[in-house]
Figure 1 (tube, one colour):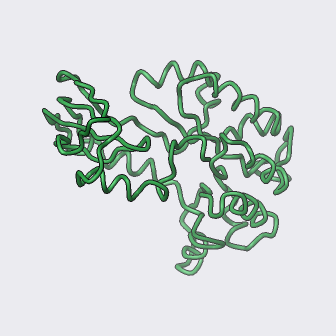
Figure 2 (tube, one colour; figure 1 turned 90 degrees about the vertical axis):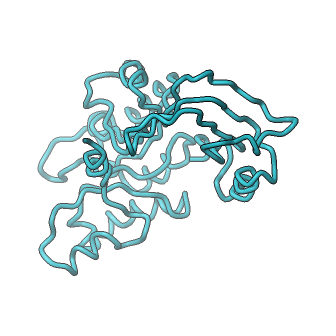
Length: 251
């Protein structure tokens, strides 16, 4: 997981505050940019961005963040915008390889993805997952793997080329391109505290000390089951809400 961050937030939050307040100079300041505000649908002229520790410390007027050692980049009125991080994607559903997928999405502003190759895994197992990850590393796309958790997707009702166990998940978590557990579609297993389901979640959380696990959850019948499906077995389990957030930003 640490591969995708130059510095962990808990290691640099004080530095970022000092830079924003002008107590320390920024490493880099981009000046005179036109910021595309994707929340308000505005373009803000004469916007600066101060950067330290590989993270944004300030957006606005960054004159007070510039010191003798600061690298200053004059954007000369060019547009600057945040890159889009796709919170959940199956690359193989696009019918493209990671390289071709990256060629298609990067020009449109997607700079990173949290991808779950469970369809490839359903055919080839972890070998297929690793092949996808190896090719994704050849692209400029920040490709963050969430290890498939439900293979086969419907045990006992389908033919599958592989079966993913808690031990497999623990092994896959050791890669530096793995950031968490992929979508846990077996919500009845979570509600019913199925030992095999919980072992998979624990295997992911044990490695990352609280990794996120993506999951599907349909409308459950009772308030009690609703709460159990959200919070059992731990606060690392979260529903996929990114699609709702996307729609909320649309005009």
